[in-house]
Image (tube, rainbow, N blue to C red):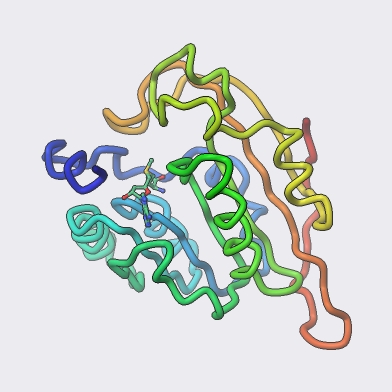
Length: 215
Ligand SMILES: C[S@@+](CC[C@H](N)C(=O)[O-])C[C@H]1O[C@@H](n2cnc3c(N)ncnc32)[C@H](O)[C@@H]1O
């Protein structure tokens, strides 16, 4: 389905600029060196993160999207490790300082449990996860995202799922989004930035910056 959408779009479906949540919260990347962008699509987020100096790995299931991601990285003269891979086939054993999951609401509640588990696993102790997507109010806007409200996140859902991590940002808000033809118009968004607890007997955490926590 995704491959068809990208192929039919003919051009960058979600634009070439990064999601605003990254640009508006640059503190998220402070201290991070390695980063994994999951279901990265056409590379707008991985390329921006590489431009900030991170060593970025990404994967997506769509060949057309991965090809566009490689083109965008080449145009911007940055190196990104782009992989054509399905979520279930990805090797989740490698931990990263930062894991970026932006608009990955292609699964319902049952599969989401496993999806969140893999994301948790991919963050190293003391590292961070950013999850950015839509709340159920997005259904009323119809300006992007899946048609199923069960796929969306609420602050309660995310607080529950990451209640053993430090929540650095949890914010639900509405704004006009212009991210290519795929995401266009007034939207109901939600951000989570969470830090994985450190196993004090092993890896030292990277330096955290003070950050806003909103609900
Ligand atoms: C809404 S797009 C978001 C893309 C990108 N994160 C962005 O913000 O531009 C959702 C992405 O998830 C990818 N995707 C869907 N199912 C997947 C799966 N099982 N494994 C890997 N990627 C998948 C799609 O190919 C698509 O690129």
